[in-house]
Length: 397
Image 1 (cartoon, rainbow, N blue to C red):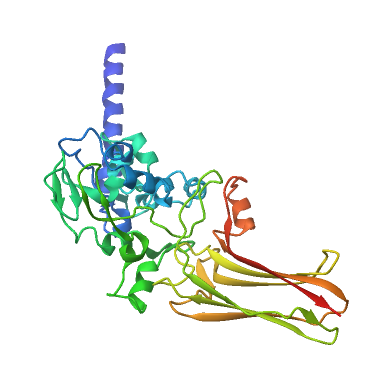
Image 2 (image 1 turned 180 degrees about the vertical axis):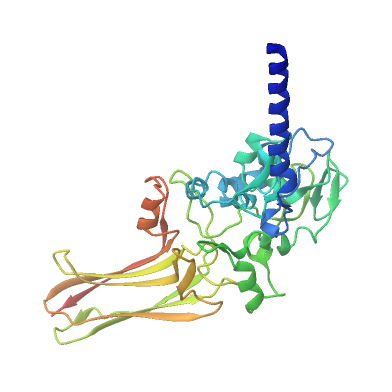
């Protein structure tokens, strides 16, 4: 009797498990991934002749490219403290990692679809080719150069110890904009808004210059030591120049040019002191700032008297302002278009004699301090860099 009861219990348990499984995977509508940001680059086979597709191994031969890449923010895309803080939030969906670690080889799970189309219910299976060390490399060499068991390059040279395929179309700006032009409202409170590609297409340099022209300047050099010089490109991927850690340096590519006015050496108490600083988006083919909507420029004027006391300040901001709750929406945008000029003026009528010092500073900011504190980012996470500063000393009689 006890044996029959045990058998019945086991059968009943199995029936329940099958039923639950069918409810989850059969009866539920598992929606396939369709949007470009939902889909990762499939697991890539290690090309014959190589032991891995890690940048650290690529660097044994391509030494200069590797050293340059290490100075790029691409190399820190996964370990970036801000990004990791965002991932920990309940509102972060599965596909946010796809631009920061774009190879499936870098991801612990393979996402097969979404239950009932719900971005917070992805159907996941363990990834047998997951490489944790490759994951740490973020946007790595293989992100752009490894496909279908081969290295994709601009020449397809036969000298390489690995299979190489020539495909300059693949290595075009379209590859850049696959991440740097992600623009969608995912949920009412979650918006992904990176419009650099669209800004470039709407700007004056479309079809004349592209991402590679500016961010990967051409250079004649050896690709591998001893193989002779040929056309290559720098792999710093110069951009904002704001490092991800205070112990790391990166390469800046500043779009702004600065045109300051001058001040006289002497003023009188009845004079109005007028100073202006013209900023021009002279070097970027897209808006500045661009990318992350939390980025902004700040122009700061600070006037001190002979005792070093601040007697007047003025702050100007260039960037977007967003409201994230209850619905994500842009409420202001004064980003500068390509070739746009903007003049910021400071004026003051002195009420005391003696030496005065006017300090002018322009900073490029990743985010404001309040946002950094909300995300619990530490002091080793730089929030800004200074891109312009000057002092004017004058006398008031």
